[in-house]
Length: 328
Image 1 (cartoon, rainbow, N blue to C red):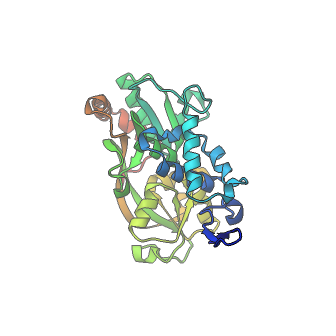
Image 2: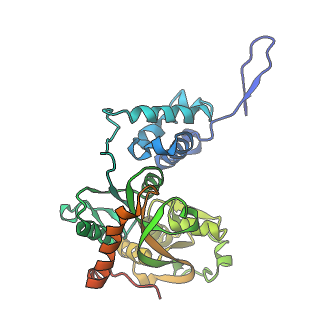
Image 3: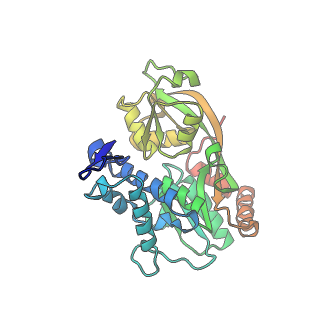
């Protein structure tokens, strides 16, 4: 606490420091963005938040600029929420207008399953889950775009904005009431791994509690780890980073889907044989989810398209293309 200066005859009044001062704590832009993201979620009505339309790094940068970084911790979030409302005014450069009742299809960027693609022939996105959903979209006659966003941002968009379909989303308890769970597109084991040459026990949840473990920020693995009371978590943006950190000895173990781990190993030039597999935390289904406002009739054709893909073998063909290993 810091006391505000008081005039003659007045008692000094305590003033709280901001909860985040990036310049003093050493937080990077991603961490500052996450804090601002949280504030705007809390102080802006969900139906009007439009968080996906706010240039978050730009807003986050404000928190490190004078006089904002000295602003009271409750005053700053309200100021940012008001600024967000201005950005959503039609015609503003930060605003994006959608036709009434328009359906938006988005992908949450996760290594292996869904990510932005530089190859124009892949339609702006690639990955096993993205490809499955794009084929579903083709069969239902969806003519809109398929946009990809960082996973944390995509999850907030689908939870707070109307008319959204999002994939892939692992079905864990912390997310259960945020979305309508429409189509289970695959399932995988969330498993702990470490280096094969490391003398580290990863055979039980109890053993994991003593280790420094890499997980993707806001990912299903992070939620599962917290459910299991694993507190020594190293949060990163993607599993490619976890693969590098594990092999550099910067983390003891790594938790993710088994197929995601295998893909990150390949991407990093590490052989799968260099890993030792440990305890399985859970087998989780990944879904095409929707924002809760979508009526069943809108989503029914997507379910039918997926069932058709399973029957005609095109679903299995996509799994083989990405060398997906069915959980054993």
